[in-house]
Length: 407
Image 1 (cartoon, helix red, strand yellow):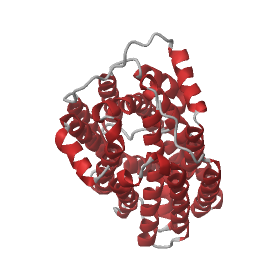
Image 2 (cartoon, helix red, strand yellow):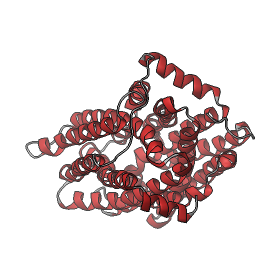
Image 3 (cartoon, rainbow, N blue to C red):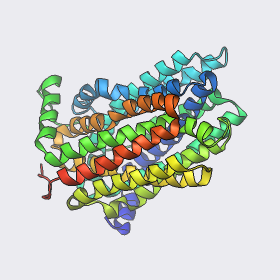
Image 4 (cartoon, rainbow, N blue to C red):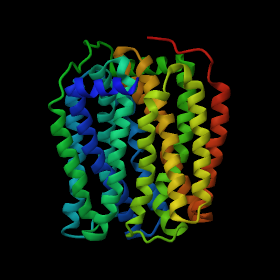
């Protein structure tokens, strides 16, 4: 879609504007906790393994309840489900600063809160996958995903910097209140979104409905290849996300309470923002077989820069490019799934896609933690470079040349 088409989408669709605003405020809070929680854990444990475990726990619930969440989201009012789960996420995060105001919050509680909030997010994400196409229509889906990615990425740029500044002033636990406020305001904005968010009555059981989603995924070769590539890419993303604070401290010599840690996180978000700005122009179903392996190869090169860098600015440049390349690959997979999924299976198919594509995150985070503890964080990043390069080559070979089957 052209820039004019994107402007028409924003100007003519009030529900999409509210949806976008909700995503921004929720993401801003999430971006704060993304840097604050690892700092809080590393500050109190000094352990790369426990810091990596935190990143892993944010993804594990997707693997555990994703199939059920997708089937449920295909059956209920998706907007109401999204609002309810957003409030659950906010309530879970509230317990960290509340407890820490009385006594130092236990690390176990941080893990439990992460699990509860991440589980609620699975259901919210399933609802969002199915709701967005009904708000904007299939012809504007790529543009909507690009706008969401760009604007939400802007929030991710400011969030880590705000988080680092708050850690230095009020402390890591108290900084979580920004995340809580983001969830509350985001839920409120969603109440104004209008549309039909419930599919016609589905008579199949949850089990058979989830099975139908799996059968559809297996039947589409392009979808299968993209999911395998997404899983491999998420190994590298998990490794970087789980060890970025450790990399800043041990690899670049920056103190964990230094605001420059937030700058490094923000650099990745700038890359994601750039990906969002160009995605609508890059994406076409006929380009998937070139776009995905190309983005993976660029991501491998960017991670090599990050692994080799000895200075903050070069590291930030590498992480910026890494964020852009990996997000283009991610958004390509998401948009492809939303376009080809049957109407009654949109949430299920896309949650299955997210389950597989994100499945590598906890393994990447944990493996990188052990590698970093044994051989240094740079070695863990170099392993990610190899994974991305091999995946790019395999994806280029395996993706079919014809277009997708339309549902």
